Length: 191
Ligand code: SF4
Ligand code: SF4
Image (cartoon, protein in one colour):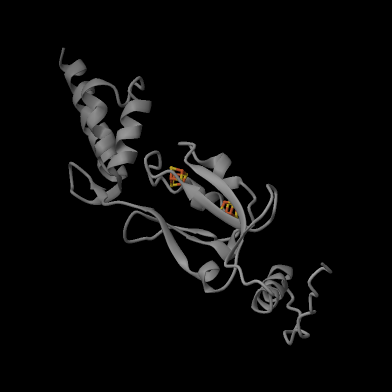
C-alpha cells in the first residue's frame, strides 16, 4: 500500500528568541502540538541535548554537590529542607551532575518530554534534616552524616571520641575542637 501522507504542520507563529534554547523549546512545542501521532515522551539516543536524570535514592545522601555542578539550573535545592528538585526543560544532558555525584547515584535519561511536564518542578529525593547533637540546629541529613562517619573514620580530627564532631553543625564543630585542644594544652602545661 502507498505510504501514509504526512501533512506539514501549519506555520509557527512564535518569534525567534535571543536564547537558542528558548527558540528550540518553541519549535518543539509547536511540532508536538501538531504531531500526527501525539507522544508525551520520545526516547532519544545517548548524547542528545534533552532529557531527564534519575537519582538512586538508596545511594543519594542529598549532599547537593550535583546542584552546584549543574550549569543550567535544572537541579535545585531548598534553603528550608533537604530536597533535590529537577526541571526537565532546563536540562542539557551535559552529565556534570553524573560525574560530580560522590555516591554514583545519577544516571542520564536522554528523551523528549513534551508539554507542561517538562516545565514542572519534580522532586528527585527528599528527607528530614539532621539536627546538631550540640545545639539542635538542623544541618545536612542522616545519610550524609552516616557517610562522613564511614569516610572520615581514619581522620585524626574525627577518630575515636572525636567522631561525634561529625554529628555537629560547622559552628559547634569548631567550638568542640577549640575546647578540647585548649583542655589538652592546659593539661600538658600543668604536667
Ligand atoms: S544525587 Fe549525588 S550529588 Fe546529588 S545530592 Fe544526591 S548524593 Fe549528592
Ligand atoms: S545533565 Fe547537566 S544540565 Fe542536566 S541536571 Fe545534570 S548537570 Fe544539570
